[in-house]
Structures are given as C-alpha cells and as structure tokens.
Amino acid sequence: MNRDKIFKLAKGFRGRAKNCIRIATERVEKALQYSYRDRRNKKRDMRSLWIQRINAGTRQHGVNYGNFMHGLMKENIQLNRKVLSELSMHEPYSFKALVDISRTAFPGNKNVVIPPKKEGISILV
Image (cartoon, rainbow, N blue to C red; front, side):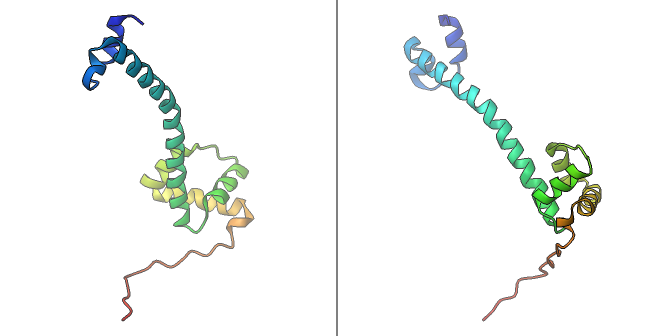
C-alpha cells in the first residue's frame, strides 16, 4: 500500500499511529486483521443470539430448543433461525402455532409440563 492509502485508513487513530508512516502501517495492518476476523465472528454471534431468543420463546411453552428444531425438521418447516427469533419476539401467537406443530411432530415434546408462573416474591423470615 502506498503512503496516501495508509494515512487514509489510519484516519482517526490515536497518537503517532495517524501521522507516522511506520507506526501507521503496523496499526493499519493490525486493524485490517481485526476487521477480517470480526466479520466472521459477527456471523457466529448473531446465530448464537437467535438461538438464545428461540430457546427463550420455546421454554415459555414448555419445549426446549433442540426438541423444537427437531420437530420443525420432521414437519419439513424450513424457517431459518433469524426468522424464528423474530417470530418469537414480535409474533407470539404465530410462534406458539409453530411450537404446537413441533410438539405434535416429535414425541419427546408431548410429555413436557409447563412450569407455573411465579406471581410474587415470598419472603421467609
């Protein structure tokens, strides 16, 4: 890379990393390595977030994530995790319908008891 391109990429860096060519070159190279790595990590993090949201939604209906996904797979419902997480957050009735379909498709989902909701906190003295 030439000098102008390095300084353009180093704009906003602190100290001599923005105006000393040798330090700027090192910092820009390291920044490009971080950006390459984190573009892949972002995909990983988003998938993990979607799975957590789906799991929270399914547990409200007494089914865990793995059994829910297995039931959807058996019924050949091909919704990706991003769409399922959006449904679990913004469309609870539609998501409950999917949970019911998954529950009928996979026998492991039928014997699950929905835990009672806690009304208030009882204090023991």
